[in-house]
Every structure is written in C-alpha cells, then in structure tokens.
Image 1: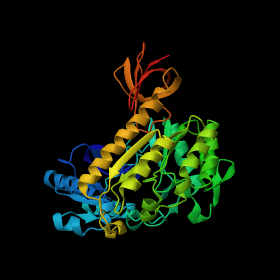
Image 2: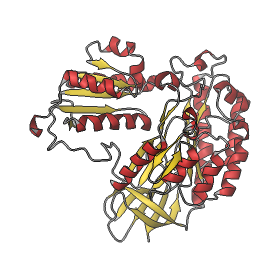
Image 3: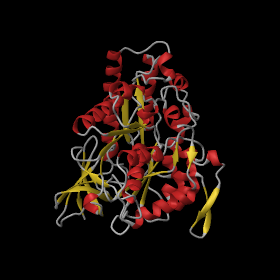
Image 4: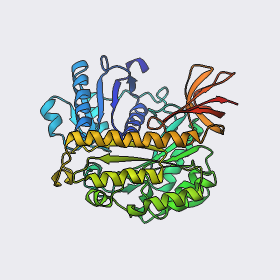
Length: 438
C-alpha cells in the first residue's frame, strides 16, 4: 500500500515560526499515510507555505507558487500571505485553496479534497517528535502564536492575531520528545518570547510530577533540566528578563539572548511604537553582563525609518559603540503594505538608507572583530553543523544557526554532525572563529 500512498511536495518560506507551522502540517499528513516528495513533478499536490511580511518576501512567495503551478498544477497555498488572498488569486486563479497562517485544519481539509488519504496503520508510522525540517541535532520550539504589540512597521498581529500562549506542560512534553529523538539544541521562538503566558495569566499546567507556570522564567528553568542547549530568541527587554539571565550565568540555558532592538534613538523608537522602556537598554545590557560575563547579545536594527534624522542615526552608532553587541543584523526600511509606518512624514531617500546601512555594518564589523578576538585561546564547546571528516563547521554557545557566525575546526579524528566537541580557539576574523578540537 505504501507504493500507492498519495505524494505531497512542500515548500516552506519565511521565518522559523513559519517553519514550525510547516512541520506541524507535515506531521499530520505523514500520520495520515501521505508520502513526501522532493519534486513537484509527479506529486499529487503541492503545498506552498508563504511569507507575506515584506514586498520582497511576497515576490518570493509568488515565484514559488508560480513554479509549483508550472511543474505540477495542483497547488494549495497557506501561510502569512494567505491571510490576504486577493493578490494570490489575481496572479494564480487556479490554485486549489488558500488559507492563512496557523490554519492547519483548513490545509489538511484542502489536501483531503484534492487527494484523499490512503492510510495503512501497519506501515505508516510517524516518529514521536513529528516531522522536522531542520537538521536532526537542533529544532525550533514555538511557545506561542501572535503578538500583542502594535509596532508601526509590522503587520504580524494582523496576519497572526494577538498573543496565544501554549500551556507550559505541552511545550515541555514536546521538548522532551525532541531531546529523546536526538535533538541537542532547542531554539525557543515566538513573536514576543518574554511575554509568554501573559494572555493566560501564567496558568500552571502539569509536567512530570509538578505544576509549571506558563511564564518565561519558569519555562526557562524547566527547559534547562532536559540536558540540551536551550537558546532564547525574540526576547523583549522586560524587567523579568534579568532573572532569566541569572539562569544563563548558572549554565542552565545558553548565555545567548536575541532581542530585536530595531533602533536606539528615542525619537525613532517612539515612531516605531516599540514596547518596553528601551531608552535605558544600555544600562540593562551592562547589568546583564555583570550577572553573566559570557553573555552574547544579538539584535536586529532598521535604518532609514521614516523621520530618522542624521542626529538619530549618529545616536544609533554611538549606542552601538557603548553596548558592543556580539551579533547584529541590519535592514534598510522597506514599507510593508498595511503598516502605519507607511503614513509617517519625512521618508528617508533610498540613497541615504544605503549610505547609513553601509556605515552601520562597518561599525558593527569593527565591534564584532574585537569581541571575537577576545575569545582566542579559550577552550569552548562546539556543536557541529557540517563536516568533511577532519575539518568541520560548527557553532559555539554564542551562535544561532543560519543567522550568526561559525567556528571552523580541524581535528585529528573524524568529526560527526550533531556532536558537541571541546575546541581551542586559535584565530578570529570579523564574524567567525577558527580552532582545533582538543
């Protein structure tokens, strides 16, 4: 019967949160007996999980849908761009169905309509951890959906709704299944990780032999008991984050915190409608490094936001010099359809955005090079992502996959992907480290 099982081809675009949505859909489909195809041609249906945040992301999504229509013709569209289906229908009126983000049941229903399942319970098995699209040794752990913030440049609440937190027990049981399946690193994600549980009043739920509150600190403590690397993403600098940094200092979770600051100038932050008292973030970062000297802070920034003056941009550069962040991404402001920021006065010319972006990246490159140089001579744990045997590319506790730097290793013995080795750092450049396994 397996040879007769319907085949699904899948395209997943966008952020890690969308990737988790894709994994959930695929897990359901495999449990129902569907097989996965690496190619559109020959599949019974194609699912495209889209991103609709930026115009460039929408263009990539439309291109992926077009490819699927050309190579197969039976296409189901889901994801953030599906929340506003008019543009998709205009370009591709013959797609089978369009659903928004997190609408798993609608996606499954569309698949069932297009090609009914041929389930054989004796041979169609799904691993306890579900279907994963990441390498075997790390996985994204999504703890909530949606967001209560109303940043002027963002339409995520419009696409994904307000904050909806998962019970802590559910999150922890999923994390346990992942670790038992061989996952060495859990990447905790949501739209606003430090707001976790506020919508359900931090309600406690059963895990193992105790109750665990749906609160950022309590969840972090429990995840730290599983024996895996636990990395925190998309954390806003609310006051209770200080206690989570203490867990990092104790070695319970990784000394790494990803905070999307977006800017430093009070004028720009006000126009962005950013949550929290970000004017004092420099003091907070200094305090965190006193608590946890090994802490790595990564962030993302936007330059060229409407109304950003030369003085605002210089303030940002001076702030970078003061706080010395470890890992930084920077984007030139791009209008998002439906975002309030598009109506703000004094848009920044494209040529000015370009100049500011290059100046920002040059300044951060200098900071990064100096901070990495201080790690030369240290012995540190490294998780391996790629290897050719005696040489490998891995990551330290200060590096998240795909967005941060790497450490390039040599060894006298073959190294294996997913294993953690102790390495001595022998060199550093602007973004990466170089070392040898000891």
